[in-house]
Length: 228
Ligand SMILES: O=C(O)[C@H](O)COP(=O)(O)O
Image 1: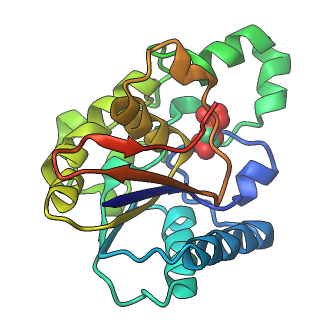
Image 2: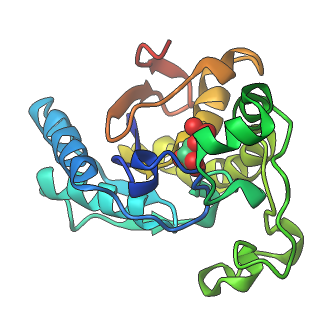
Image 3: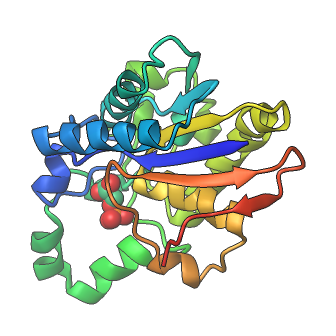
């Protein structure tokens, strides 16, 4: 079976170099073109999909739709989950990454962005960035609502969805397409390829680019893309 992962096409805040996390930023025209090209790449390879997954965020949803349009697969079932959202960047969301580095030092910003288990500064429950104040997240159990996640915390909320839903499709012989985010996909790839806590920090995923994995029905990885 094929499992194809794609990070969303370039977003407006990728372009503006801002911490984005759970802020629902749209893709740019360049991001749209990346996604169209990504879909065409899969089509040229003759790949097809039975089911697709994405997050609750429009940059990933729109990217998925552009892929599916190129593949003439807009009709297949699409499942959305907050568990595939980008990592919640806490109180950093909305800040410019370069300005934040000037204010707190490049070393501190590097720790926030690329340490494995250091979480960013947290948002409190009165913040508009707190998912508990956002309608679409009203079904997340209160004790699971993120307030600022490390990569480790992101892994902890992505993997239950892999276990409960996505992996079952592969066991059933289905080809699966997932459109998600830099850090939710790093979480999944770390698990699938058994990458160490140190090594995963070097993995940076390109926007709008399909990553093709072949997996058997026992979930053994047959082939994986060159990632480093
Ligand atoms: O949420 C963000 O800002 C980006 O999508 C990922 O950011 P990072 O490269 O700092 O992890």
